[in-house]
Structures are given as C-alpha cells and as structure tokens.
Length: 436
Image 1 (cartoon, one colour):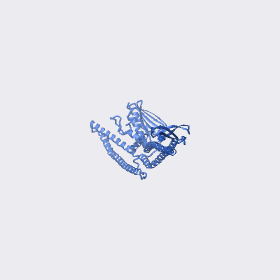
Image 2 (spheres, rainbow, N blue to C red; image 1 turned 135 degrees about the vertical axis):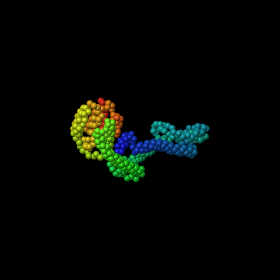
Image 3 (tube, rainbow, N blue to C red; image 1 turned 60 degrees about the vertical axis):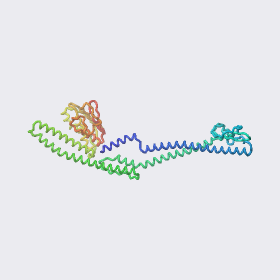
Image 4 (spheres, helix red, strand yellow; image 1 turned 120 degrees about the vertical axis):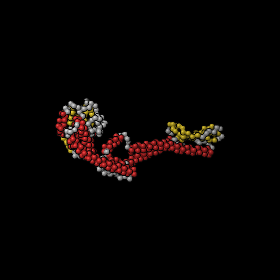
C-alpha cells in the first residue's frame, strides 16, 4: 500500500511538469478575459468619444449658421470674410439652384498652423437678395483630436491600472484562499501507511476544502485499518503455517530413513520432501517481505561492508568450489548505514542468486567500491526482463526451482535501506549493482 501511494506521488510529480497549477490556469484565463475586455472597451471608448466630440462640433456649426442668418436678416448684407480662431466661412452664389445642406469631415489649409488640418464642414443654403448662396462653415477639429486622445489615454490608463490591481489582489487573495488545500496536500504527501500517524488537517470555513479534508481523513483511517488487518493476517498465517510445515518435514525425514520402501515409494517421498522444503522457503520469504513492508527492521547502524563481504565470500567459497565456479573479487574499504540483519539477507540473496543461476565452470566477480557493490556472473545467454525482474514470483524459466521471490526481496531490502538496485546484461554476464 505504501508503494502504491509513493507511485501515485511520483506520477503526480511527472505530470506537474506538463499540467499547470489551477491558480495559474485561473490567472491566465482571467488575464485573457480582462485583456479582451480592455481591447473592446478601448475601441468603444474611442468611438463614443469621437461621436460625442463630432456632435459638439456640429452644435457649434449650427450656432454659427444661426448667427450668419441673424446677421443677414439684421444688416441685409453678408458677413465679412475673416478668420475667427481659424474658423472659415465662404459664400458662393448658385443663382436659382438651391444647394443642399451637407456635413462632412474634410482637410483644409489652416492659416494659423500653416499646414493642412482636419476640419468639420457644414454647407447650407441661404437666400439673399433674390439669389441662392451656398454658405460653407468650417471649423478645425485638431483641438478636438487632442482632447479625444487625452480622454482616451486617461481612460485606458485607468482601465489598465484597474486590471493590474485586480489581478494582483486576485492572485494574493486566491493564494490565501487556497492555502488550506496545499497544506492538506503536503500532509498527505508525507503520510505513510502503517506508521499509525494521526493526521491533522487545517481548519477552514470553505465548504469544499472542509469536505476534502473530511474525505481524506476517512480514507486514510480506512486504509490504515485495512493495512493493519492485512498485516496481522499475513503474520499470523505465516507463523501458523510454519509449525505444520516443520512437523511434516520432520515426519518425512523419519520416513526417508526407513529401509522398507520400494524405489518408487522413495522417489515419491523425496518429491514430497522437496515440495515441503520449497513451500517452507516460500513461507519464510513471504514472512520476510511482510516484515520489511511493516518496517520491523529499524536497528540501523554503520557497518564495515568490506569485512561483511569477506565473511560472505568465505561462507560461499566451498559451495562455489563444489560447482567449479571461478571467483574473483576486488574489495575496497567501504561502509554503509543499514540494519545488520537486512544487510546479511541482502548479501546472501545476491550471492545465492549468482551461484544458483550460474553455469558449471562459470565465473563470479565481486567488485566493492566506496559507494557501490557489483556482482556479475555467467548464466543464461540472454538478458533478464528488466521491467519484471524485481517483481514478486518472476521467473525467467518456468522450470526453475526458485520461488521467484529472491530478487523481490533484494529490491525491497534496497528500498528499505536507501540503496539503489539495478541490473544489466553485457558480454554474456549478468550484472547486479547496488549504489548508495
């Protein structure tokens, strides 16, 4: 169960490179929406500002038109042609043809600025002394453009500041609101089943986070209860099985020593005895794996690894010689912090594996560095399945006498001891390497 939780967090860490945080995603979406609103509002503001200013200009021109008509009615003459604040007025006689009234934006020469400028022009008909005149009034709108740009700049700056302040406040506020979520996730990340941890999640008045904390608490409590039940069952079952297995083995030992059996009966007894031994080893291996998973090996201390390997080499030397296996080793001074019992089992399994899966007249090479131990041996001419190698009950050959738990035990002890275990196949040699 602990391995499953760790695997989930590893997968989550990998996905974290590709999946952005919710807060980041929200900020990006919010920024995109605000930017769109900003652009649309800018165009709308500019358009309506122009419309309002043109209407004001048209109102001024209508006022000038009224003044011209009043002047003509009062003095019975056309006004003098002279610029007033760069305003222009022209009279063109059209005879009996009544000109149409028209408003438009045109470019005219400005005597004050001495260059071409945009003007708002109004053409309207005027009856004077028996003839129609087309009166043209023009007023520069450059000042209006400056005013329009100023109003637009002020408005857009204000909108931009509002957006920036809104984003900053939103980010700060959301980060504070999401703090209980990240705190709960961090607690779960450091949670390990089987240690009897009492989880305490932060109190929050946000309904969704409170519901999440309650669900996490209930889930972990259920997982802890199921784990303890499974742990007790595994330990009890293994212990209870060990006693009848021992009795069966002892009875078979006695029977095998009897002389009254036929050759066929002796073969059947030997097969039964071999199966019982295999079942006993399987039971012991499963019990060992359960103890490792339950973290029952915690007597960690500094061990002289060179001395330990030399001791194991001496123990296995006779077995290797009986199988005519040539051994070479290069041992440097090295030490490791681990549980002595687990380290003893680890070395036994590695050396047994190198011997049991070797060839007659094969070789075993042991190389010990300061932070690594490498054991290579001859054997099968093909590489093992690296993806399934350390899985429980994995066998390269169906007919193998191994119970398929040796390499799994090596892997679990390595994990419990903070050691990295790896395998490679090169030049018809199988290499198992431990690094720490």
